Every structure is written in C-alpha cells, then in structure tokens.
Length: 351
Image 1: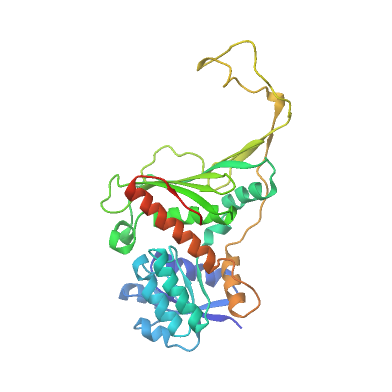
Image 2: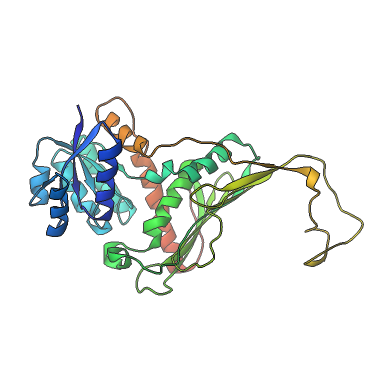
C-alpha cells in the first residue's frame, strides 16, 4: 500500500516534489497540499489533489503519514514542529533550519514524539557528484588533497524570497549548503578549519555570490564557489590527487581523468625549457609518455532512492541515509562559515 503524503508549500520546490513522486515513486502518494496562496491551491486542485484550507486541516488528516515542508526557510522550524507534534513524519527542504540551534530544537521534538525527521539532501544522488565520490572512495588517482566544487550562473536574479534576509535567503543557504553536504558525505573526517567570503554584488542583505573553504582532518581542502554573476564558467568539479587529476566539466558529466603512467622521478633538468610563459624548469611540460588519459568512471544513481529510503525507514525496514547527526554537523559548519564571513577570518574547529 502506498504511503500518503501531504505537502506544505506548493511553490516551485513543492510542485517539483509532487511531479517526481507522481511519475517515479510507487511506494508514495501525495494526497494533498496546503499553500498560503489560493493560486497555488488551485494548481493543486487542477492536478487532482486535495487543497486543504489550512495547515492545521492537512495535519489533522489521519491518512497522511509523511509531510514535506517546502516553504521559505524561516518557516521550516515552526511547521516541522507542528507536523511532528501532530504525529506526522517529516521531510524538510534544505536548509533544514536557519542555524544549528533551531535544528536541535526540532530534533528534540522528533525524539520525544518518536517520529522520523530528515532533510531533502537530494544532491547526494547527482551523477556529477557520485563520479567524484567514486574517484575519492576507490583511490584510483591516489589521495585527494584539494577539490573545487562550483555552481555558476549569470542571470543575476535571486528569485522571490531567496533574495530576502528575513526569509533566510542567499547563496550559502541555497546552493552552498548542497555542495557542502556533498563534500561532508564524501569525506566523513572531522572539519577542522573553515573560511568564508560572502559577496553582495548586486543584492542587499544576502549573499549573491560566495566562496567557502573547508579543511578536513585527513588534510583535504575543499573550495566551494556559488556565483550568480559569472559569464565564463569554470568546471563543475576539479579534484587534485597525489597521482592524477580529475575534472567534471558540467552537469552532463563531460570530463576526464589524467593519471601518472610512469612513477619515475623526472628530477631537475639541467637545461632551461622555454615556454610561452618564458624560461622555466618547474612548469616545464611533463613528457606525454608519463601520463595516461582515462574516461570518468561509469556510475548509476537515482534520486528516487531518497524517498524510497524515507518510506522504508518509517516502515521499520531501513535506516535513514540522511541522518540527524549529519545534519547537525552540517549546520554547525554553516554557522561557522557565517561567523567567518562576519569576522573576516578563518576559524579552527573540530566538527
């Protein structure tokens, strides 16, 4: 039997969840939605869904076991608590809350009422990310020591509430938190240092561009860049490892790996090499026969696995993939990144 689900907030993300669940997930059924805007409730009716007249009416429906919270960020906490106390399991859109303190309050309620609470970290299933994680996990190119993760656009538009500070807008909480979650799920070692630069290039009160630096205990440094004002994009991923380099250029996963094919130490040449950069020894081209170009690894991933896991966890046959403990760590790091940006300094930590 399909589990019945209700959606609170039927804007862009709420309707995205509904369409994907309707078309691709056979263990879950969206029964109805509530949105503060009548126009969005009418869209729900046109799709054959119940349009509840209030949040309380949706939460009072005994058939609904699972609630998705897909509202602006500043409403996540009160709606999640209300849903949990109404006896519902909850999936919350990211960022789960505005800070780690809010998250701890919500998790305390979830524990008290004995319900499942998790966060929609769907980008753990992105193919470009799973490729990079595969290279990290297998050690195919040696030990990674620096990875760059970028999402860049040029529309210069922070749509709706994403451009307002009171709603928890800005790129760190919008895209940055996704990219940070990916990295922290890949490298599960403690985060030991963070640094953030948040830019308000054409907005007021929220970051429309950001650069985030995170160091892990195993020595891996990561740089996250989110830009809405970039007209020449860099690769989606660039990973430097001890025995090679991996690049994923775009969402379509075009890219390659280059690895050492000859472990022989090239040593210092007695002769200067003349390049377009002028005379150099250090940056002289490596002999072609000492490297090997490889295709990116083939991976198989499915976003539907997120919801299948949530349903199985509620039914007692699985454990959450996106765990509360992981979200606590993530939000703690996010809090420190905001602190770093305010104080214009790097911050040592152990998270």
